[in-house]
Amino acid sequence: MKKIVRIGHFTVAMNRNTYHLRWTNKNTGVQESESFGRDLERAKAEAWRRMAALVSPDDIIERPNNPTFEELWHFYCREKKPILSLGRATRLDEVYKLYFKSSLAKVPANQLPDAIRAMKDRMLAGWTGDDRDEKRGKRNEPLHPNTIEDIVNIARATLNFLLEERIIVGPNPVPVIRVAGRTAPTEREPKGRHLSFAEIGKLIDACVCPHHLHMMLLELGCATRSGVFPEMLVGQVLWDLDAIDTLPAGKSQTTKYRPVIPVTGPMKWAAAQAALSAGPDLHLIHFRSEGLTGRNGTQIINRIAKRALGEDVQKVNWYSIRHTLIDWLEMRVPAKSLSMLAGHIAALDTKERRQMRQNDGSPTTLIYLRSKLAHLDPIRKVLEDEWWPEIQKHCELDLRLGDPKVDIEWSDAAERVKHRCNTDAKPR
Image 1 (cartoon, rainbow, N blue to C red):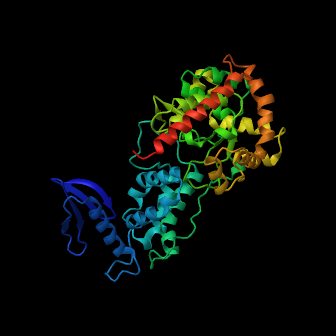
Image 2 (cartoon, one colour):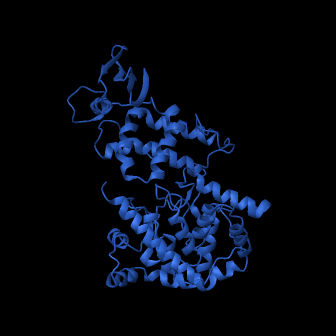
Image 3 (cartoon, one colour):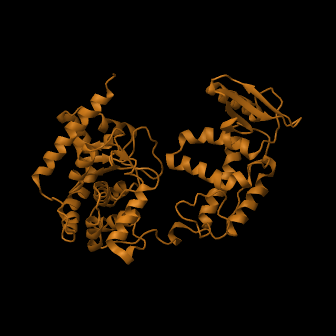
């Protein structure tokens, strides 16, 4: 039989185009199975129903009152993943594969505190997890205590969250587990270093691919956190407002706010070119008409920096660009405007963001929406008058500052993208 998916200690498998649910009877030790024909979803639903019998306090079926971590984990992921960001949800899958599967999976709930402490001690001693994918290079450094604390807290939350939500009853919650050596944000070494205008110019000139150049120019003009542009869609460009909404539609805002950013200088023609050449997936930053995946964004800045700066590439990354611009703007724009641009505080609510994307284009509506982005006006002026002209002095690429054709390209791209989106939205 070919294993399709494992849900707790139940396995959905396929044999001769027929789906079977298999499990081991814990009382007899004998493997049992049930056939569901070609209905995969019904087989999965039955597996979840039987899992619920193990942990639900309302189910009358006799169940163990001390479920294993593996059984708890499936219900924790089912409850938490829908409300987490994509990155955090992926993080759950990674930590289970690397750390929890070998250390905690078969541990009963009442023994979890000791097992988590033992796992913590192994990580502090240098253990970096099992079944690690080394295609991108082997990890030689031990985990930082802050990372270990994050992993430990995820393990604790697996049981504690289910107890708080009364999805299970019986076991005692896992207490706080201290990790020696953790540091506060102010004590940590910065992830990147500040860049000079000469270095920024070299980075721009080292962009040999269109998507490298587009991403570099957009990052230089907005100080967003890394990971924003690789997943950005064409629909996030606010053509009528000369701005970009960095929060994807349907995605929940987190404490690290995704702001609306101004489009200034070369960002205008870069965004227009990227939008017009977007593929069927409508990703703004793309290679061969396909959006970026995985760690492509990190690989891009690493390649550009190595090509541009050679031996001086140490600690040059998207973090460097973000904080170089933020610190440069600090003495030039109001503190509140800068905090909103950096995503430290929220400037708009969900309703206002939706209005910006779905505006009817009327003059009155645009006046109202532009007033909501008034906090960006000081930033927009400083970038146009000082930031981009200074960068132009240090790079060979023509940034087309003051070129009237840029506005025409922007308007043309807006019309064509809106027409394409409306065409795709019509039922066939």
